[in-house]
Length: 206
Image (cartoon, rainbow, N blue to C red; front, side):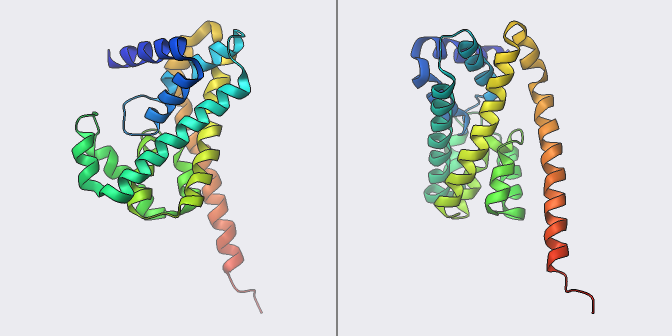
């Protein structure tokens, strides 16, 4: 299966290249390469809990990789546009429908909060930097939302790996379900946030 092959590649890369490999894999994960964070970060947690890696350095390396990959995707969208993305993406198993979903998601909502929330949404998080670049989103808020969102998600999976060291298959089995739990929580937060902003914008009763 493709998933097993990707997982095997990720584990071998982590074991042979250390923190650099972790940064490299997460850079790929933040671009259009088919490498999910669920196939990388739990194994980083294994290395941490086994005493082979330092927790702070692991988080720093993977966050750095996420930033680099996201910036690369942002630049492709900013300078190359959709035709370039589709041309390159066909060699990397890019799903046109998934890209369109990410583009529609960003175009409907836009903004820093949207970019932050997208870092927790399956599929969307891999591609959201492209429409952000295509939409010429300012770089500073893009970097801020990407850093915070990616670090939180990476750390969450890393901690899952640490606590489930002896049951790593459970992580793989339920990581996608956890995706949707996080998404549901974020949707509820977004609804509460929008309602509170709407109420504040209403004129006071006379």
